[in-house]
Length: 317
Image (cartoon, rainbow, N blue to C red):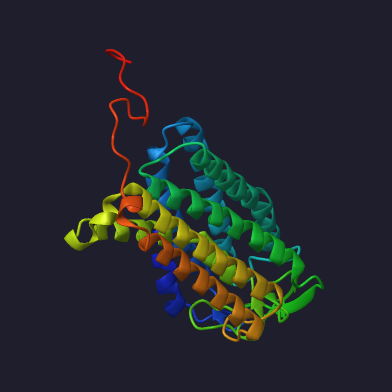
């Protein structure tokens, strides 16, 4: 994926063909980076499973194969100067892409769901890390569901566009909502004149990386002398939980905003109020955790059996 992203980054400048005002190789470049980062995270995560590791391996392999097929289809369409998503034409390139998508998209969703379930039934590290992984993979699954839902809700009426070869292409569906082909932002190409399903999809898909970064930051702070209370697993887990809840709130508001056909750059009063509510609740939650009495933030005393209230009754018991 990263090799494809590097190749596409060069092709963006070497190939002057454009689709809807965007270089034809921009989409493969972004897909390569996004899928590469997510796959790298899964590669790090799956060996940490203590239960169902073999199942995780199989579904991780399924995700990798499906990812190669899907991103390969995007690159194949770009190389031919035409649309990959929503292309309803009947030429060979369009039918090849349609066939690959029909077999490749659902395995990504199923594999992510199975891995999320595996994470729910076991611990993969300390409580903070476990909570970050569960919330992150859950939000990634939700982002895929939202993308499928919004893509079917947008652009219901077929429309035609001209591809980079001057060929008229029939498109059924769109990334944009309210304005299917709204003017895009720089780099991301997210719509500036309507809603865009790619915004919540991107935010949810990369939740796991953000929450892992939060977990790592809390672990580093715990090593400082003036943050000794963070050495307790419960305190860090609660703060990660607050961060995950706040992130999920942002994801929900962005999905709601896109569904209403509103550009992420032009939020209305209702959207701003929703973001403000998420921010206030997140800060309040963090303040409650930080403001707990030191005795409540500390870990319970260790017992010989590892369980409070029980005493060791004999060797090996």
